[in-house]
Image (cartoon, rainbow, N blue to C red; front, top):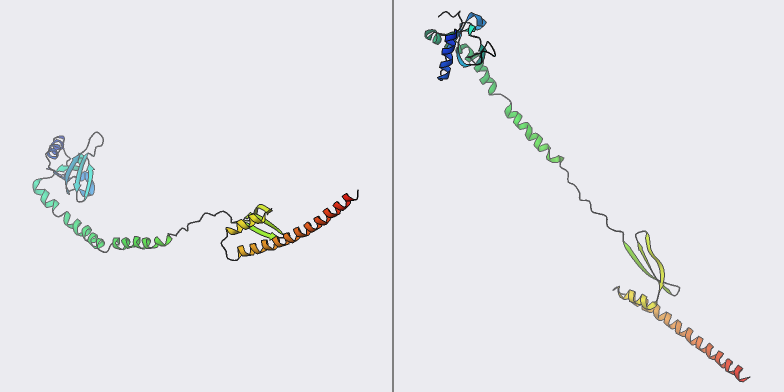
Amino acid sequence: MDAGQGLSTSEVQSIREALAAGRKPRVVFTAAAGQIAGQVGQVIELTDPEVSDEFVVVRFGRDELPFSPADLAVAPKGVTRRVVEPEPEPEAPAVAAPEFVLDTPRVPAQRLEEPKVEQTEKPPARRAVKAVKPKGPAGLTVTLAYADGEWTVAAQQGSKALAKPYVVKPAEALKMVALVDVPGVQEAVEQILGTERAEAEQQADKLRAELAEIEARLAELREAR
């Protein structure tokens, strides 16, 4: 068959039936195909001719491209082997050899090591967060004081005075000191109270004597009536 002629309608139908049967018919490119004229390929699919005139998909070498029936002709059986066998030989060494050379020294192994460096740098970025302790209330101070013969109690929280010094009885002061189990404190308080008691007794005796003198004088004045 003349390679200059394109595929006829019946040949296209025969190719469609062959594809349906699982075969891939061989075709030869005509002069209308340009520089690849005379080369042999395999038809792998027929698309919709209403969508595009180039509906015959041909695989040749490593390419799969659509062509029109005018670009193709049915390849004779005898010519197919002679045309197909020399074609892969110039393509295979020219393209395959550099690929094997480039595949072996490629850098993927080195690039796989780069994330390891990033992983070692990430942990230092973690910073320990110190727990912040909530601030507690200000300290409370209760003061029991003795001055000028009087016992006073005052209370203060931080810099704020909760209770100004007020006078308490000596007995109450002694009860407060009894709650504080500190050697020497209660003895000091008892000593102060003992001194006050002695002074009060002396003053009471003096007042009794003065009162007796006043009562005697009053009795004399009553008798003088």
